[in-house]
Length: 135
Ligand SMILES: [Zn+2]
Image (cartoon, rainbow, N blue to C red):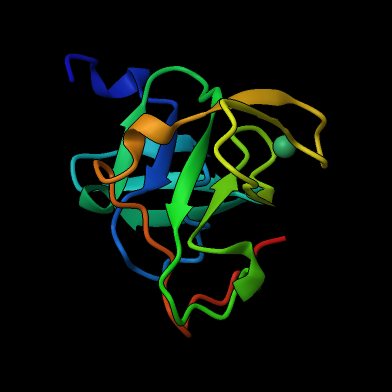
């Protein structure tokens, strides 16, 4: 990526670690250093090691697709192997079938689903210890 550090405004987790961030959800970057990124998580700053994050320069406009592990406890098992994370409000949503776009029930936005990222970014929900504390 050819952007300078100051241009990165958004970040999401791309590693399978438990950092209090939702899988597939984008967070606003408050501060960026060589090693760390400080993110705005529900209006509280959270420092995350930079290698764990994928950075973006423009506001995300697509649902992230998150692959669930078989034994993940949340979201509910009946959601199946995948779910989506809203690019605006971070709401998690069940994906029925394979639609190109989906409406978010929380923020009412309609966004494309980033199916093309599947298997590339490897966004994976953890098993038992992903507490999803964030609301
Ligand atoms: Zn939303």
